[in-house]
Length: 409
Image 1 (tube, rainbow, N blue to C red):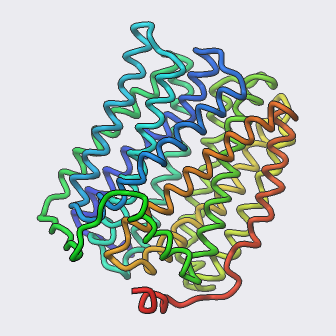
Image 2 (image 1 turned 180 degrees about the horizontal axis):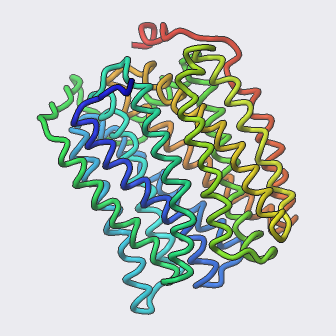
Image 3 (image 1 turned 120 degrees about the vertical axis):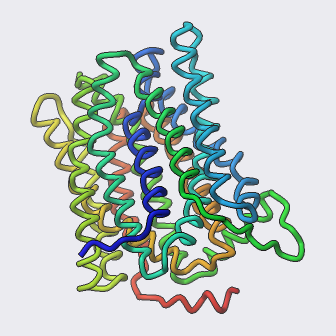
């Protein structure tokens, strides 16, 4: 029987769905614009991916503590409007003939910082909208929505780029954030202002130390923190190189590139549907350990991509295996993490987590861009795949209880 989580959650879910679909419609849009419109090479594409994340993470440092003691929905609406404005500047500049690599960098920074603030606020918002026993159901629906958008978005977005120009998907993504702001506004109800501590926090890096301190002091969260940060960093570091390899050296068309990453996302839907029954049968820890280990075994196969239909099939098969495992792991992990975060530390802790993840992705993307310049994209992708396999050693080997909530409070 399908469980109802209420009207307010449905509006939140709708806002999430439209912005997620827009994001995946613009999958790798900046890399494609740089390659197709600005004739960028592997190093420039990696710099574009890395710089936006790195500077965005630095800019976002004061945002976490600032968000913690403010109503979350107005913050989320503001971040949506900022992303809309920044992204719409790209098609406007392109039409006028003013688009440059520097503008893409600036927009990537602004969007990256807004992403971090929005994600931190949305975690706290979700926790306030649904009961704790419904968190897995809610996260499962978000996960299914993500993979549906990921399956449909890249093929449609790259097809739109082929038909209507390289900035089409960026414009669609901008509009999706505007619609997301409307959906969040429609949640309604009165959101209480979070209670302040005796000494109001100043927005700065020192305040985020509380989030990092909580993560690193938690036996349950610490290994997952290092694991998830490194896994996302290694996966994302290889993506710009794979784009250059497929679209450049191997001669795949943009629509084929989009299909290779869109079609396998059916696995995300399957995985998100399997998460609850697997959890009921095997328990939270075993599901995270098994799915977390399996998801690290697939990306090495991308180093063997070659021209033609069989090469395209190889990418699809590898991504299908990876994404199915992620579809199981992600909602279980997201629920596990929220269950172990006190309500007054959710934003700071998620901000610290998100900033670390984005900074790691940025650093690894830059390093892998330099590595690809020395060794070629294929060898750099293979090295990332081998290191990914080792990240399973960082997963927690023993189940932990949330008792650290009392000891760290």
